Image (cartoon, rainbow, N blue to C red):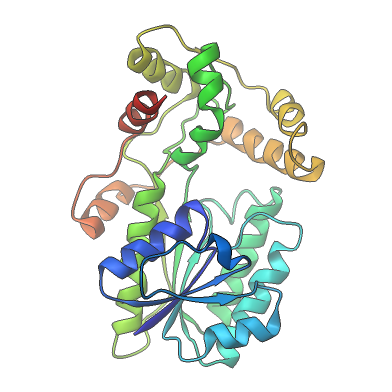
Length: 289
């Protein structure tokens, strides 16, 4: 049983690799830079990317299932479509795709619309697939920990509707479980969608209150201002990407990222353990600061 992991050097992909190795799978990774491929012994590395047709064909040879992760990029949709086409061409029908929650609703946000389109392609091309739809990653907080810890501000404009932030460790473990279930199935399984959420649905002020408690000093919520968020991001990322993040933040504020009934219980059953909480993650970050 050989499983191909794309996006393997990122926060989620790297943990997917480790979870698969722990479960005895043979793992192959597609990476742009093998120098960054610090993986467990036995993991096979193929150099290339999702727009390199020759490397994709090499990567898919002899593969039983694929974990498809497309990072936010200007050509994200093209990457997804090519990867799925080459997978089908290579006889790889079993896929776990990392999408995003509300991909079918937040279609004004480019990478949500991209993932919605890829989901439709997966369904219509007849893949045996699990579509994973995570909420906001708790791990994003690493990018703003200095602002929280040193300046006493929680700057993410997540609003007052609530966001059920999910830990990348939970995402990766569910992905590994689904990859192995798909790869080992004697026949073709139907397409299934799983919302990946955290155990608590938190507002901006509630997150700030958690940090105040964890740090033992006041942390204020920076407020619901996606425009200011865009301006800050544009100082260190492409302006189109900063604008896209603004559009996503506007949906946090207007809609939230709220689980459906039974999501938390379903994930707890799949994992056989409780989900990682935001509070515990904050404690981990604070301890390492």
